[in-house]
Image 1 (cartoon, helix red, strand yellow):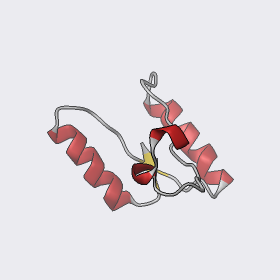
Image 2 (image 1 turned 45 degrees about the vertical axis):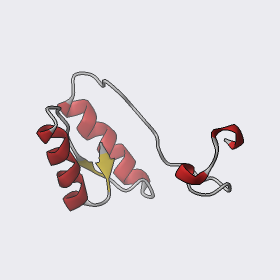
Image 3 (image 1 turned 60 degrees about the vertical axis):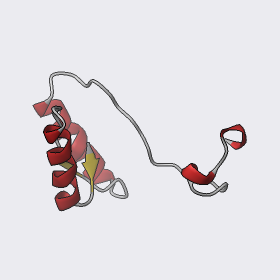
Length: 73
């Protein structure tokens, strides 16, 4: 996973590991194309394959996802 906040990333990795999983955090800010390239290089260098790739960056004018009824999405 990636994010801008190393401490928050470390906390999520810890939670995943405590639940029996494995995770790796890569610091990157997608507002910077240089960071995107650095992230891609780091993932390619450290991972033989990806199990999942999720882009959860989205904008909705409907409001918070938890408050929106499924038929409105």
